[in-house]
Length: 234
Length: 227
Image (cartoon, rainbow over all chains, first blue to last red; front, top):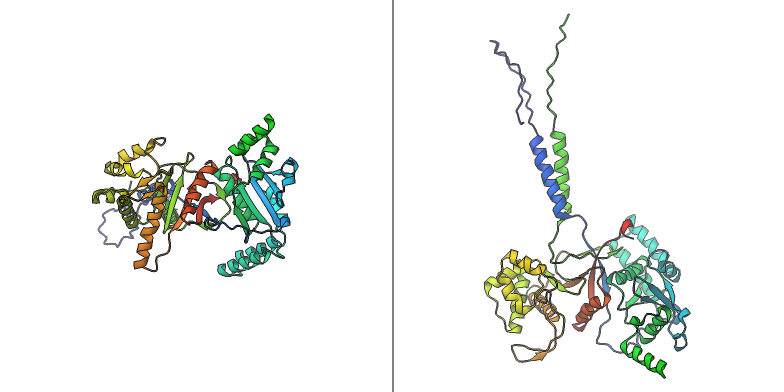
């Protein structure tokens, strides 16, 4: 295999001629070894570093929720993550009157055709501004830190309790939903540049409405089930 | 006239260029990739468009599998050791130096504290075999609240998972007193995408009980195929 090739024809003549030596090293074993190493690295390593999504949950110590969570009805959107990757939403606040009205709850899907359309429409004005900033960031016209600060400013402006335009999204996963559903919902917030969103527990009204919409008793709490059976027995 | 000489053709191919290419490729792979961490359970994370990278250090990772089994990992080995020692003291278990060193070497851990000593005495192969029995109660950090009286006779209803988290943060706080440049430890949650929400909610609720309200949810980058 490997050989150091020198000039072949050495006829051993008496002439003391300086021969032109071509020194060629055979690289084949080197290539073999490198290939092996590459294969090893390809199999034993990952190129993709996992991403993360930052999420802040509200603290548990403050029970007085009235403060700060007062959102104008027109800006509130509640997403209910149901079983089997189903997604429901309603706009505004849930009223006693709408408990029995399954039409109040609209069904949608995850992804571009479903909920994103609604969210983008709701977040009009803010979305474009941030998108423009993102473009500038991509073309390296602004620094990363200025980008973040500007986004923060825009979102703060849009989320003002009075006079703000951005929607406030409440994400309420049911016990039947999966972790993926939750991440997908949070993902939509990122895609649509929504600044104000929170993960919350289902209220009794939400559960009742979900039951009315889908006829699935699993959405109800035990107490609700008992109550319902009690009233139907009368 | 000159004789037409049939030249002896050598089949020698110059591999230098090829070698150059492979070395380049090799360098690329070595610099850009990270080694696959072996984890006791296979977790497929959901995908997201978020582009924030997982920090390399100062994170405790909470691994949640489909059935709600919890495993944890810590990047700082010295802190792992201290944490286990103080947690052992809390439960009235004294770990030997050998066991502490064995614990340090673990990439991730998820054994009830009562079984920990026995687990650490095992060889690596035995440990792997032990972890394979995923449905067993002896695998995974328990999250159910049991009323326990600790060494000082105080009764608390904290579950083991909470204790782990509080001890890990306490260890870090102690270290931060010595070295003020050390950042606070972050909590990363790595859960399988098919995990039911109540399982994740339980973990998050436990963390919220301890006033830990910021998490990193580990996801992988959304590509066109995964949409």
